[in-house]
Length: 557
Image 1 (cartoon, rainbow, N blue to C red):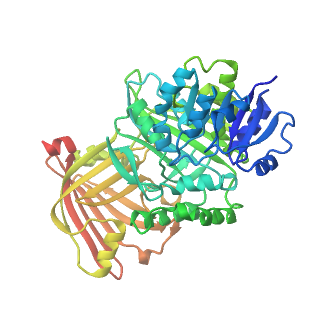
Image 2 (image 1 turned 180 degrees about the vertical axis):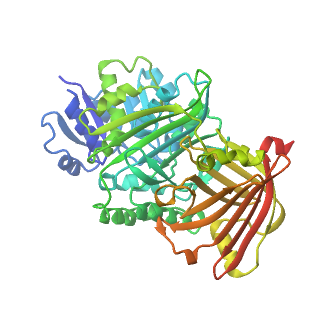
Image 3 (image 1 turned 120 degrees about the horizontal axis):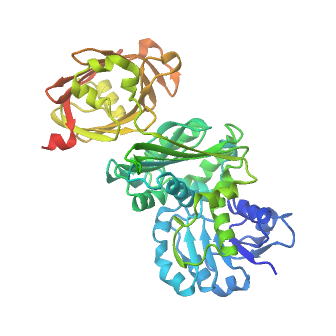
C-alpha cells in the first residue's frame, strides 16, 4: 500500500499545484482536505483516479484522531493566509504522529513556529514552516551564494510574478493587503527601523523580465536573513506586480493606511481581486525571483553574487510549492527526518534538492559572481575628468561600499502656498537654519546608487545611474514618480549639475514645464559642500539649500 500525503487547501491556488506535482513526480497517494469537499473534488477531478481522494475537513478544528484516520505520514498546510493564524493544525498533526510542512509566508507565524520544537522532538516528528519561495528557496540560494564569505554587507531578495499567471485567490490578496501601508520592521542602513509596507518603492531591471516596480513586503526573511547571515548594512525583501497601474495603485491605496485614514486594506480584498481579474489578460506570463548579496569572499575580495530565476509560460505559481515537494520527497525516502524538531524551513533543503523539482517546468536559473567594485555613475560619466574634482567630492562619488554621511544645512524657501505644497509633496526640506542632515548611500553593485536624505524630520530618496538611449551622457535620477536627467560639468572648483530633461512615470514632459534645478558640489577643507537651487515655472523659487557633509563617524568626532 502506497504511503499518502494529506494536503490541506489542495484545491487552492498553490495547493492544487502541489497536488499536481505529487501526482506527476511521486508514487505517493494524496488526500485533499478542505472545508468544501464538493469544491475540492471538482478542482482535482481527473487527477490520477485511485491515488487522489477528497476529505471534508476543517483544519481550524481538526483533531489528532481525524488526521490519524487519513493514514498519511505527512500533513501539508497549503491553505493560508498565515498572517494572524495559530498553530492548531500543526499541533494536532504532531499529536497524530505525522510530519508537518506548510507554505507559510506570514512573518510572525514563521517566527513563532519554534514554540512547537519540544513537542515535535518528543514525538520524533519533523515540522517545518515556510517550505516555499520564502524562506526555503531564498535561503537555499543565499547559502550557495555566500558560502565561505568572511563578511556580508547587503542582501536583497525580490519576487515579481507575471500578471497573466499571478495567483489571485482571496488568501493571497489578504496576505498582501494585511501589511500594505502598515509599519514593517526592517534591517536597513546598519540598524533596525520601521518602514511602510508596500513602500520603499523602486524600479529595477530583473534578469529576463525587464524593468519592474518592487515594494517592501513583510515576509519571514526580514527576520531570518539578519539572524542567519548577519549582514552589516541591509536585508530587504521586495515584491512587485508586473503592471505599473496595479503596483502603483496599491502604493497609492497604502497611503490611506499610512495616513491613518484606514486601519487596513484587508476589507477591500474582494474589490482589489476584482480589479486584478479585469486586468488579468494584460502583461505577460513570465515571472521571476532574484536573490543578491554583496560582501567580502574568502580571499578578501569584494564580491557581488546573484541568483536569479525566470519562469515561462505561466509556470511561476508552481515555484512556491516546489520546496515543499522536495521536502516531502526527502521525508518519504528518509533523507530528511533523522533530526526531528520544529522550526523555519531554512538551512534544511539545499539549492540542488529544490532545483531538481524544476524539471518539467519552464524554469531557468542563473548565478552571477563578479567583483563588487564597479564604477559609480559619476566615474562612468566623467571618465578622466573625474580626477579634476576636489578630493571630498571624489570621495563621495567613488564609493565602493555603502556609507552614511552627516552634517548641517541652511534651507530657505518662499512662504507661498504653491512652493509649500511642492516641498511637502516631494519631501524636500522645509526652511530652517543649522538643520541636521544625514545622507545614506547604498551601492547596488551594478553602477547605481541609492541616496536616502534626511533633513531634520523630512526625508526623501532617489536612485542614480548613467543615462542611456537618447539620454546617454546624462546622470539619471529617479525621484518617484519622476525621472530627472542632469548634465554634469566638472572643474577644479567642483561639480555642477544642471537639469536638462524630465519624465513622469516614463512619459517625457515638455521643457517649458521643467523646473530650473542647479546644484554645485565643492569642498571646504575636508568637508563635502553642496548648494542646490530649485525654481519652478509659474511658481518661482521653491527651495534653496546649502550645507556640508562628512562621513558620519568623522562628523561625530
